[in-house]
Length: 291
Ligand code: C2E
Ligand code: MG
Ligand code: MG
Ligand code: MG
Image (tube, rainbow, N blue to C red):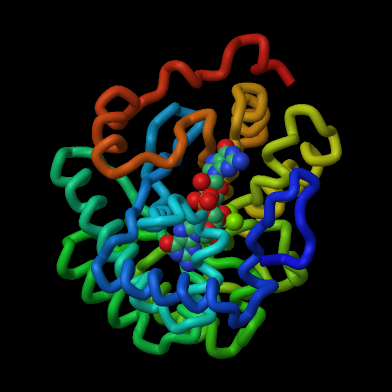
């Protein structure tokens, strides 16, 4: 626990601040068990092309319901997994579930893609491209329907080895996306040299763009830069129709956020799809269209 209590007197847990406390070690043990028993859930958040309203796919996000402590968010357990050697089995579990679900949507007649997040250590895993190739083969999902999301800072930890992994993944035909774009250090120059297909503008810029002119300027520049480099541009954290309309006008290729849907359990996603394959409710209203 952090040294400082909150105003209400409750103690706030910051895993990064307590390297080897009993609680941290116990959590790592529990996480290991959850991964081994395939007890981690995977939820799916739709991605929509705002120009047409078509759902094009979904991002797979890991969820951990701790037996005693309840829901623990990925921002807490992913770093734990990274630092304890659990990230490899965790990533493979998410990839496996995501690709199987994607295959089942496709069998049901929905031409959808799926995206999975990779953490820094995955990029140093020399086996990853072979494992991905095997899972694609087993599930029958076309390589171009899988996107792997990575952050710039992951690549920067060891650029030479990371880029080798990325090149091999790219050779398979898998798509690569830079996640949380705009929050890294190296952005502009490096983007040109990476084997990537997509940038995902970080939600910290997107969330407030409808009300903050400066965030709007950042998003607009990111869309233009992405397009100038022949990349698809995705916006995450789209929470309202105003933001959706702005992004449509900017020519953003895909949007993702609570406005379209929260991340959904696999069964709920399949049900949601039946009603929302095209989303009439988020067609841009006339009065937003004029620039
Ligand atoms: P991310 O990859 O950038 O995923 C987007 C996060 O934004 C998700 O949080 C999602 O639930 C949230 N989000 C989506 N739309 C909105 C919105 O409109 N408003 C707001 N406020 N938030 C929105 P989540 O699921 O808590 O995941 C947080 C991060 O944890 C992810 O960020 C990703 O970096 C990491 N993560 C999640 N699952 C995995 C995984 O399976 N493997 C790895 N390596 N990382 C994961
Ligand atoms: Mg992501
Ligand atoms: Mg992100
Ligand atoms: Mg993030």
